[in-house]
Amino acid sequence: MKRLTNAFSYVFSDNEWFNKVLVGGFYLLLIPFGIGIVMINGYLSEFLIRQITGEKEMPYWRSYKNIFNKGVRKSWLSLVIIAAVYSLALFSSIEFTIPIAILSMTVLLTANTLFITKSVDLFSLVVSCLLLLTALSVGWMWIVVGWPLLIFLALLVQVYLFTNPD
Image 1 (cartoon, rainbow, N blue to C red):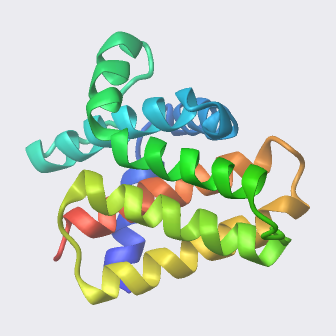
Image 2 (cartoon, one colour; image 1 turned 180 degrees about the horizontal axis):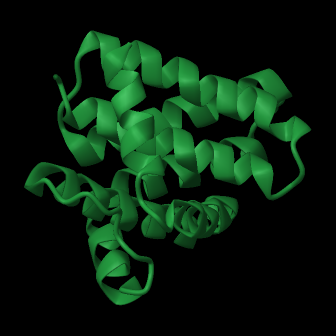
């Protein structure tokens, strides 16, 4: 449980955490258009590097060219999955219900984080999936802005848990 507390403390210790999470939430809304996942993956990659090097601040979104370039290299799998989901929705009779959509997003975002971090342990996987599932399930009750913020915050905590085994 201390690891989960440390993960939230890391994010909230940044003086500009709200602005950084707000922008991440905006890009989360753009995932269906492809650009969102690219920017989120670039940011999560930079976030990961800062944790490994021991920096205390989260990256700024101002270096959007750098974030975009990192995101392009890290997003091919996610973009293929998004294209497959669109294909299924358009060319099959599969009905996407809200629970299936929530579970699908949890799996997609967790697989995405695993692809970026390339490390995980069982505790991190279970706790972060439950956190992300909760953010996706409960978040819709917030105002439109609150939901993406909550989900992006859960992604940051997930990356922290996957890369900090202590």
